[in-house]
Image (cartoon, rainbow, N blue to C red; front, side):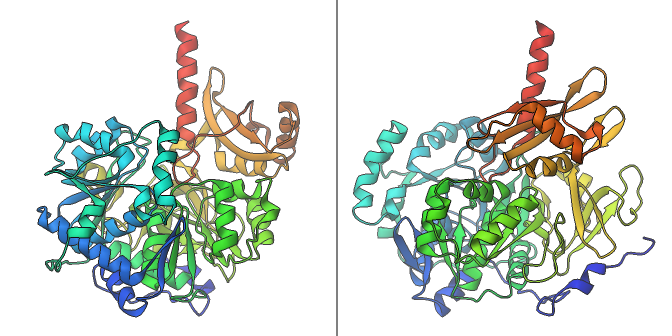
Length: 566
């Protein structure tokens, strides 16, 4: 490839343009528009409770006014530490309306992690569940937090669930937290009952002003705050809307299993739904049977997810009891989608399941297969409108040839401004002309379809050979008795590293290590075949369902260190 071109544009269906005109307005204005156009339509469903777009907008406005009364000024960072629930949507848009910057915080964080994020972001307030209130109180003296806003799941449960839930919560968590309204602690119910008046208008420059600080997972070093502007999030959501051109505004239902504190769930479910006037079906956590019941009863048409989510549903013993035929489309992200999973899920639902690709730093989506057009199995598809991508050789500053593995770099209007207060780290991955180094290894074919080989840091070098875990995992997923598998490199005195497989069997399977070894040797070169197998009941995962490969690597290192010390 001597000159840069975009062969993928030749495969775009006529409904998807190569370049688009994007709205130049703040993200929160879409909620006001949907409240005007779709006011009486259902905006969200949550455990039996429903809110219309008019109600969602009114409550967001009430909270925005209250935040301003507490002293929120333009550019202040406000943390949201909530699962998927009405409050997480209301708080998100309220903060933006009031001129603040959202800091999404994982509700599973321990105090040490919470304290780090609050210090790094300089968050002025936090909105959290009542169960998490003690954590917020404990870290407050060490951070810039001035106010804590507290809510509970029961606040949006219908009668009689709202009366019963506190007893369930006490039994499940062995704690019942009862915060009281004070000068620095504010109850959600009190806010909605008392807050009145109009929000003071805040002038927002969509391309310059930040909407979000989204913290990376921190697999290497401390998590970094990814700075995403209103424009970053608006354009990626508008790209999503165009990619899903067969879905209609105001008449679809989007299943919100992916957490909104992860940018994938935030864009593909929350922002997409609000922009299109569609209904969100919110689920505070992923429980396979609960998801199957909700799909059967609520009939979602769009179901963004991760491979582990689809795998868990397909392997549920009660799967055949439920009707999943409402699902029209699913874009799968966060991890490689095994071909067997794609085929089986499409056969059961009758809908389309395609793989996409993106990162927190890109709002997040940059590539996807066509949902209703030409798609290539094993590929993450092609770049989205106005998105460029290249493969660069790993050792030299030179573009790779077709089919040659290198680092994927991307450029587009959805790419972040940089890392919060980390100019050196930003300069390492983001060039002055806007190209972002993803840290992912892959290649592009002559048609412009991209293939992810693995993370740069996950590549295994054994006996001088480069081994990509994803390739070995794909083979393991083809075995009929494997539910989940992940490959890691472990230290080896002779080879430098060797290949280890962590495997979760399907229920009732008695597959052995020798049988898996024989299976892999039929499909892989000998140097790629796992030398060690470890069977587990489950694998460690993030809240979005991504298998934590680095956690397993660290476990292996600790085992080795323990052996050496003995």
